[in-house]
Structures are given as structure tokens and as C-alpha cells.
Length: 93
Image (cartoon, rainbow, N blue to C red; front, top):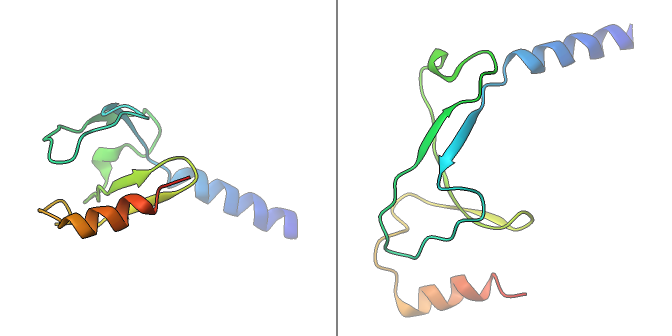
């Protein structure tokens, strides 16, 4: 019985995955603060396709592979020098 439940859960998980392939910016690309940039992507070909969803959320993230932080909407608006120092100190090794 347990095996059947796991099989069903695995099947359901596979059916709800839609993914995008980002073409710009690329992984590891650094963008200077205050610089405008365009985000572009395509559907990765898995089903369901991304056009089958009613809405999307795009989050701006900072960090690396192990320490990632979401940058809240509006956070890119003129921080003070003290704000920037606190933020940058969090990413020191």
C-alpha cells in the first residue's frame, strides 16, 4: 500500500512541474546596482507548458548557490549608504 501511495505522489508531482529556461540574464551574471536589464525566457518544453497557467511571480534574488535572498519589490529604490553597508556585510566570506 505504501508503495502505491508513493507512486501516486510521484506521478502527481511530475504533472505539476512547468519550468522556464532563462536566456538573460544568465546564471552567475553580475548586474551593477541601478542598471536596467531585461529578463528573457522560454518554455523548457515540459508539460504543462507555462502558457497554461493564469499567473506568474518573478522574484529578484541575490546571493549564490548556498546563500540566496529574495529582494523585496521596491528595494531597488535609493538605499542609504548605511543600508548598503549592512547588506553587503551579510555577503562577506
